[in-house]
Image 1 (cartoon, rainbow, N blue to C red):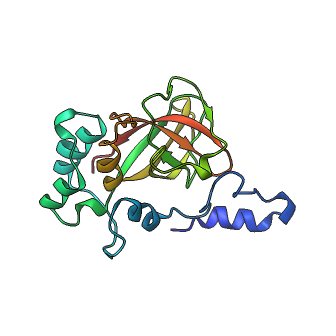
Image 2 (cartoon, helix red, strand yellow; image 1 turned 60 degrees about the vertical axis):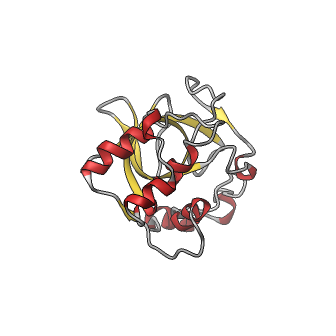
Length: 202
């Protein structure tokens, strides 16, 4: 879905004042490329449509445990398919809370953290993020909406992550198995900010 506010605000700026999204490694500044993300982890010849998973039992007993890094819940895409062939195409609604100064903005990218990443730092600059191998820093999903929350004193938001992405990256030895803390990159920066994510139960 295209964010009309972002598109309108960008079109109203003079060309010289518009952000150079290519320099920031942002290929889709006005919409979240869900199909492109899913085809990184699923067969490209499968033309199923993605959907938002709302089953509270699956969210609590399966997804939440997978994100938390429980060893017994490290399910693969094959395991998910045995339960329901459409399950790998599910998107999971998550609540986003900034750890430091970062503020979630629409279409910001959520990345899995490497095992050697220091998520206690307020930020980390990655100028090669656009050229980064997806195996080195895989994309989990995108922010839908967010801003600074005066009630809690830090940035908060809502976003979606791919269940297929979760099932794939938790099998990789170079990725932190606990995905409750990940990196976020807004569309007009190369700076990665640590954020905490938690599943929203419908």
